[in-house]
Image 1 (cartoon, rainbow, N blue to C red):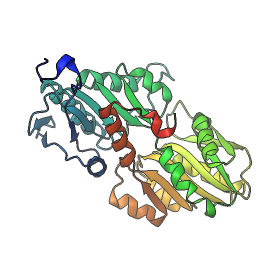
Image 2 (tube, rainbow, N blue to C red):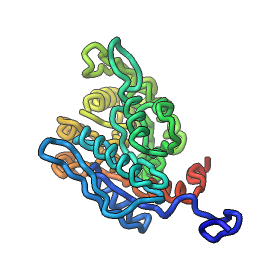
Image 3 (cartoon, one colour):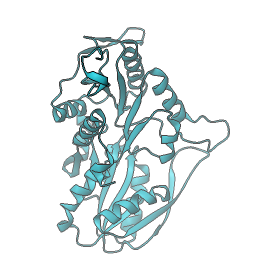
Amino acid sequence: MTPSGTPHGKNIKIYGDIKLYTCSGNPELADKIAAYLKQPQAGRDILHYPNDNIGVRLHDSARGQDVYVIQSMSRPVHANIFELLIMLQTLRLDSAGRITAVIPYLAYGRSDKKDQPRVPIAARLMADMIEVAGADRYMTLDLHAGQLQGFFSIPGDVLTAFHIIVDYIKGQMHTLPDPVVVTTDLGFAKRGRNFAEQIGAPLALIEKRRQIRTGVGTEALNIVGDVAGRDVLLVDDEVDTAGSVSEAVSLLKEQGARSITLIFVHAVLSDPAADRLAALPLDEIITTDTIEIPAEKRAKIGKKLTVLSVAPLLGEVILRAHEGRSVGEMFNE
């Protein structure tokens, strides 16, 4: 008999029950994930000291449990990063059975290569720190570049919120009689093509040149494809300052687009993004809650903003990971 009383080790749970912890990055999303799983969040204190140091104290033991730490790396970016890292180390020192870092939005995703002399690859540093801090696995959504998966030595689930967006768009197709999917740059072309195929629409591309020397701004050049008189679905993975989006929308209107719907996953929305989006001739702005959008920015953008929740997606993947079931089955993969 094994110590648990089960002969020959059969039916022994390798890890304990699901234990959810959340940091400060996106508490509303964490609440929704916990509600989906019908699982209360474990108690913890996150302490911000007068000297700007951060501390974590768990309310009870996580020994042997299957732990999921939910933290989005949104503003304040570096405080949220260190909250996650210190939480991971705290759980490792408390002998958690398995620790999964659930990161709806991963910061530094654009720093994925040396595209200039004497610059870092900060995305690789992020992956190393998450692993060294104590994560056994990671879970994230819509990385800026696919090669970021290769920076991690631990296993993970890299998901996409476009499945959720596709379902929403299919329900709106009656308002889009002649749709065309347009990507904001050539780098997003593959994902844009997949999105277009799922909704049965053609694909067009915006060709642009990034000003590498200054590191700011982009120049939109031309559209590859036909948008005249059509209902444009303008897609990207994230919107930061909305500078590229503004250029793209102006170009699309010049080329005769009938309507424009902006679609993106991560609402970074650095100033002056909310003002720019509010001023653009957009019929709808569709995004997700991987990053919590402050109330004042929601108010600026107004009623054309639609926020879809990724909580059911993340909750279901957490459940499948805990039970050892396929995640690909969710998407017929």
